[in-house]
Image (cartoon, rainbow, N blue to C red; front, side, top):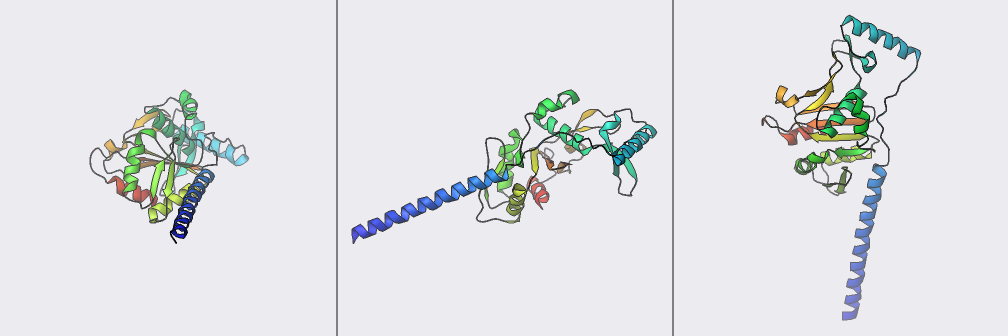
Length: 244
């Protein structure tokens, strides 16, 4: 009788071990599948008649507005009232902000490509190195699932059997063919629309109630969450808002 019980226990233990290993392998495979899409930072130059006409329009607009910078950095956007304006291309602003994030200071145009050689290379959620511990602490307070950041800086859901709406949103982002970068800082870096020069943009100093800055370009997004030095915001609420 005792032998039968012992054999039964051994079988149960073996089954449990197999289940645990299977779950871990499945999660690993799932995570590998989610980060398999490559990301590049090359600006596409679309040659078409419409593009040429738009470039001519941009040239005329920047001349009328007295801009002295390279007309190739601009694109046409619309204000809330429908008025057309020229702004620095979203792709250029994204690359400048990301280069500044990686360098932790104002990047020069001639070094951006070199800096971006160290940028994240595939889809997923990537967190800037000095922000990783803080990001995980904030995330822990608004989610039910468990998370880790791998050696390359990417967020991974390690346990997701009990998820809330923020966990589900994160899971959705991780399954998309998109890179989303997070940083915790009170400043970012922008190309000035008028001068065409790169400068520091201390957004929390300018507006202490500004929770984050957001950049978007094709299949890439970036959120710079305020450090909240002034104590005017709640970082947990900011992250909730981003994932809403």
